[in-house]
Image (tube, rainbow, N blue to C red; front, side, top):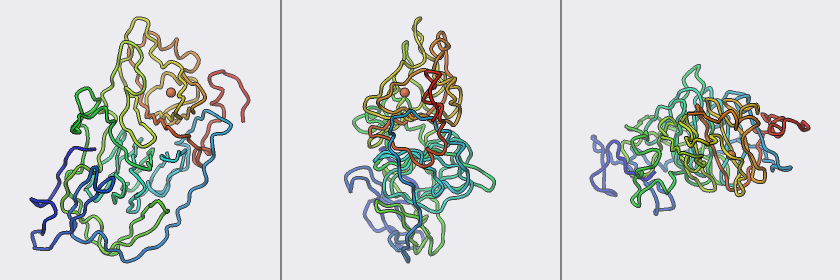
Amino acid sequence: MTHYQRVGDVPRKRHTMHRDGDGNRLAEELMGEEGFSAASSLLYHRHSPSAITAISPASITRSPLHPNEPLTPWHLRAPQLPPGGDLVTARHVLAATSTLTLCWVSAERTSPLYRDATGDELVYVQTGTGRLETSFGPLEVGPGDYLLVPAATTHRWVVEDGGVLEALVLEAAGHVGVPERYLTSTGQLREGAPFCERDLRVPAEPLLVEATDVEVLVRSRAGWSWHTHAHHPFDVVGWDGCLYPYAFNIADFEPITGRIHQPPPAHQVFAGTGFVICNFVPRKVDYHPLAVPVPYYHSNVDSDEVMFYCGGDYEARKGSGIGPGSISLHPGGHSHGPQPGAVERSLGAESFDELAVMVDTFRPLELGEGGAACEDPAYPWSWSGRGPTR
Ligand SMILES: [Fe+2]
């Protein structure tokens, strides 16, 4: 996101001496994308962010991915995957490309402190409440929230005792942002975009924790490590700039509708390197007298399409076995569209009560261990009503 925010205690001029009320010198840190050339923020720490006292390997391994060969449309029942663990280390890998990994997690405890230096993470909360604590400050989270965590932001996911936080996690190799066509030349969300700055929730105050020898799980391009920080990384008394974590709730997305069917780009919410994210929210549907409100069959020549059915009734998929919590993967090379009877049922409809998050990837998706563990073998035959089972 590119609009300027300022939280807590920052000096009048950047890159000048700054002290707290007791006269202690604060350590200025720039967090920036693309070196020093793109969005950045300046953070003011009580202690050196570089001071570490130990380094050790972290034993986090992931199973190899499998190419989608022979080419198959998939239905994944992600909520059937084993719950437990935390939102960072207990992720089930559903599918991945070279620039994006999609994971499912049903977290029951608070995560370790963590930072992912390989790219931004976008977390869509399906059920439960919790808190995202970051070096920029805290954000309360709940169902329908997207949480964008910029690369290398130190953070943790807090789940209260007895709580569960169910989420779809998108790990990007790069940065995730608002589609450029929604922005003015100076970075404001323009009129006609389906959301605006008021819809974004940003940390409102610093989060300060005093502790020493604090472990942080670090994901880098080389793998996973533990760094022990001399002082707790939540020591930022103030920050300002255009790079920070934020929340956006899917209920704040204002759908764009038309007399005839609007294509998925009308529902786009985010863009990343090699993928886009759209969401389909409850809305009035197409109002031409001969309109067909469900989508036409489509062959996504250059992309694989993932759809996460978050809630409501997804009209076009009725009868396919897909329900709330399901994830479909429709690969390029296989035309897909409404299930039998869906077109007829949709005729004359005034509104759809559906909630779904779509991820289109422009590089081929391969199946992860989590995806393979929850696949529905009958789904490929759901359009024809017959076929072998695998
Ligand atoms: Fe589609």
